[in-house]
Every structure is written in structure tokens, then in C-alpha cells.
Image (cartoon, rainbow, N blue to C red; front, side, top):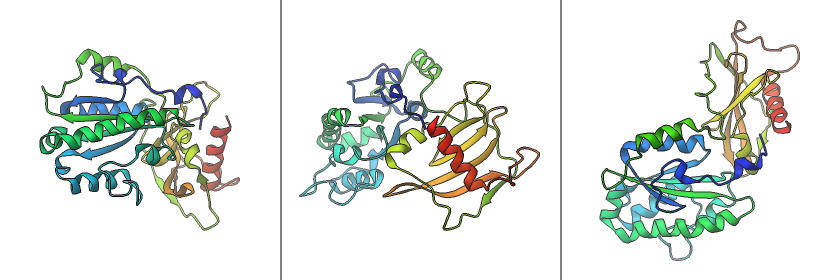
Length: 285
């Protein structure tokens, strides 16, 4: 919903964790997993969490990579390579920042260090190709395990990272309120609205109201875009999307039916029309 080129720039991973091994891969203590997740969400990364403890043999390794990444048939190439082609997998997707988070990485390393190295080395190799793609995609990989072997993020570094605002609008930072009396709008076959995969990256950034003239905050979470009234951060209307080959298709609309909270303009448009209009208005702005 915004085309600000600065928001596409690769983020320096040292912002999240100063102990970065290289520009693509880092090792983080498992006690920092929640912190890591919050920071990646804030900086608009799509997160793929891999269960290292369950990737102890070649079958489990490929199975969980395929499951978590929703890799299509043939992604692992002829002969069934251990890892997919990251460039082919991510270059055409909507995400422009992607993070692979390997939990219990110590268990993966113990079971077969060569498989762990193959995973890391392939991500490092293909990250450069993804950065050079148009539009560019940033790929990071975090291996997570117990301290002290996996270094905790220092408290001072955590405070600096938490204080830095990311490009993505979050419900927590706008002081979003809970719904009072949410109702579901009955979508009919003629209620069609699809956002292309390329446009979804911008749509899922959301929007913060930054001036008194702006009426809405817009926040995306778990494929649902919610519009909050800027004056008091009350949720008024939201749309849930499903991933399809054509893009993100609207499959549900929720609206605030408590007229004491939000007086819906019934005389002019239905919830579907209002939601679509708000999406298109913010995209044009």
C-alpha cells in the first residue's frame, strides 16, 4: 500500500543481532527466540520456522523443508537434492524479506553437520542472486540453540533494537483496541477482490496515520488487513485473504456492528465495498 523504495532496502542484520556471522547467517540463543520473532515481524520478514530436532535424517530434512516452505513438486531438482533452489522458490513470491529460523539447530548439527552446513551454505549462495533479482529479495537464516554455544543478544543491543521502528505498521504500536461487536459480512459470488502477489508486499506493510487529516491506521496480521480509526485506534473493518495462484483473494470481511463505536454508512455502501475502497484509496495515496 506504499511504494516507498526505502522500505525495500535490505536491512542490516546487525540491527537485530550485533553478533552476526555474515550478512546472511547468524546464530542466536533459544532464549532470544521471541525477541527474534518480534524483530523480524517488525522489519517485515516472512518467517519460515524449521524444526531442527526433527530433521535428523535425509527424509525428515527434505520433508520439513518442503512442508514449511510449501515447496512445489520439483523444487528439490532432479535426483532430490537436500535443499531447494532458494532463488527459484522465493524470487517469484510476494515476500521481499524472508527469514529461515532453524529451531533446535544444535540437534540438527549433532545428527549430521554436513546437512546443516549444506542448508547454511546454500542460503548464503542464493542470497546474492535474490538480492540482484528485480524486485530484490533479502534472505536471512538464523540457527537457534542453547546458550552459551549460541550467543544471547546483549540487553543493551535488545533495547536499541526494540527502540527502532520498522517499516511495518503494528497493532501494538498504534494502541489498537479490541472489537466491541464484530460481525461477519456475507460475501456472495459477485464480491470479488484480489491483490496480486507483487502488490501484497506493499499491502502487508500497512499504514500508520501520521497527520490529523488521515482517518485510518491500516495493519496486516496473519493475512488479515484491518482498518483502525486513527482518532482512537478502534477496529472498524477488516478483510481476510487466502493465497491463490492469482494472488491474495479476499475470503472474509468483518465489521464493527456496534453503532456506539462506529456508525457504518449503510446508506452508501456495504462492508465489502467500503473495505475495497479503503484498500484502493491507501494504495493510490
